[in-house]
Length: 332
Ligand SMILES: Nc1nc2c(ncn2[C@@H]2O[C@H](COP(=O)(O)OP(=O)(O)OP(=O)(O)O)[C@@H](O)[C@H]2O)c(=O)[nH]1
Ligand SMILES: [Mg+2]
Image (tube, rainbow, N blue to C red):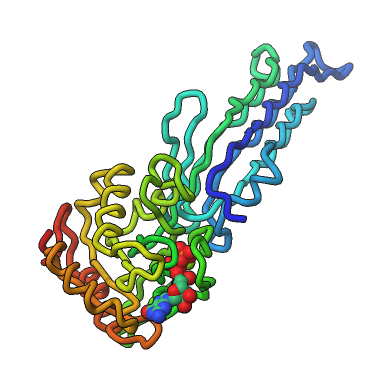
């Protein structure tokens, strides 16, 4: 199960009460105030950890509580601060306040942390002529977590187009491949390592079909995971194995991406046509080239033909200094 959204309830620690206490000995003329301060209530902190990959843990547990501060005591003893509650999330998690809908933080890097809810202040003890006060309550919060994977390249294609086969061919990933649609039900990341020591991450997301933006198939929710990618790779089954027209597939995919977020189409992208080992693919490609006037990379994941050229192109584009809206030499 791949959970990429969660709602969690955060309870902060209450501040410990300040102590009201007086010290007195027979030899003293006046009693002395010696009440210590209360300890601070624990905060709730959210931190990224590279070993956490999904928000699945929050499917089982939604309530988190930091420790309250201890009360102050006589002899100016300060109460102990409450322990913070630290919640681990994968890098790429966006934290949103439920009440205001504002983004509290977009945690992109490893070991990045943010204090989401502050514990209450400890009360003051009655020393130094002050009155003892009670500890303050903390600011509890309900937050929504949303995971957007961090990858350099996002694969977009119809189900069965060969996205997982392509990812497995170029990277260390082991994404499930099968001859039926919707084999991949949750995003898979693969790391491509080149002899030049350049490395980049490719995200395989579940297939998209016409009218996915209206909820058809698995919908377009998963496109969220390519929002942060630098480059989009449209993968098209040129043999039309499932009986569709590849030119129409391309138009449908573009349309679905546009419906999700039209700015995504401003991103550099590559068009890769797959299954060129099958005889139907040759004729289809001729028509496709006339209809789609862009650079096209033809490959076969079955024979591995053309795959190296695509990897070289990806590496070149990713290596180039990025300019917003730049189409990196690929005319649209
Ligand atoms: N002949 C041929 N078959 C291919 C090629 N690439 C993939 N296939 C086959 O196409 C089918 C689908 O491949 P997948 O890699 O699972 O496709 P996908 O796009 O990940 O599919 P979903 O996960 O369902 O979206 C499998 O039976 C593959 O063996 C190719 O280049 N040539
Ligand atoms: Mg797949």
